[in-house]
Length: 308
Ligand code: C2E
Ligand code: MG
Ligand code: MG
Image (tube, rainbow, N blue to C red; front, side, top):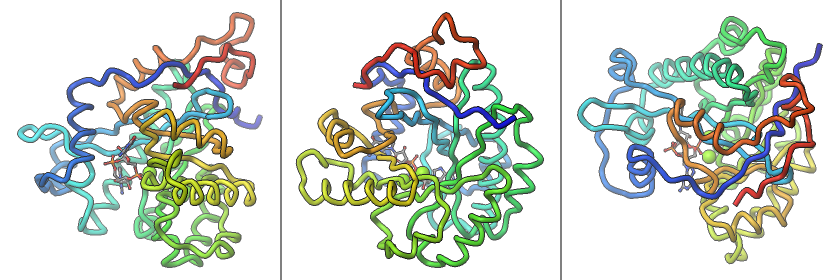
């Protein structure tokens, strides 16, 4: 039996009241203040890593479509630290071990979400260099949920890395497809890919870089870039995802442009796994009474709620 596609479970409500850790973490993200540098190996050894999840919303159906897993370190002295504190300049070996940790955690967490009634298409961030080192297919085959409902996992690879070696990216993407692994092009717009070169790459999504999403309702240049990326994704039979949506005007503009999915603090920030589940319970509509729990995730009949 073919796996069921996740969603639609209707999503409601405006920006969430943030807990202290999430608020601090977001503010840190946006500020330029110096951050402590922590070695990935040390954090792995001490069990400091957590995967936080940010919901991805289907902007057309106003429902939950999936979530992106983002790594955090919960440091005993410095508190919650963002990737800027441990990823830039990290050795390939360490980034690779982090990717393995994130992959296994996301596969494991999928079952937790599924058992709570949320069948989510999860995405993790993986550099191309890791795809060369890590036996991703074998790891997924070993750790993947055995449920037939599992929709596969998305690996987000940044556009600049794909552009650097398009041929390699194509090869890897084709190999991974067999194991239910899909590729999304992250931070699109910042990597200057030639549009024709993307034709050969089997990608499921283009994720519009937040710097172009910002003010796309009022900034004509950003609006033009967003519209071009959305049209390009559709031309290739893929979906367009806007990330970093911070205000209602930009969200509205993206919906008018035909953007398929959206992420951003306007909808919900990345939060720890437990809080993410609470958030889903608050924001995602209950399955319609007439629908069985197996079918509810595929039912378009649920009541509609506005995203923002
Ligand atoms: P990304 O994959 O492009 O992730 C989006 C970033 O935007 C995240 O930053 C997220 O917290 C932030 N964000 C979400 N909503 C908003 C918003 O409304 N406004 C703004 N300004 N920012 C928003 P974060 O978590 O600091 O991650 C930064 C980058 O670190 C990620 O960019 C990704 O490339 C990388 N990263 C995150 N987790 C991992 C991981 O497990 N492994 C690897 N290799 N890289 C990771
Ligand atoms: Mg990403
Ligand atoms: Mg991105």
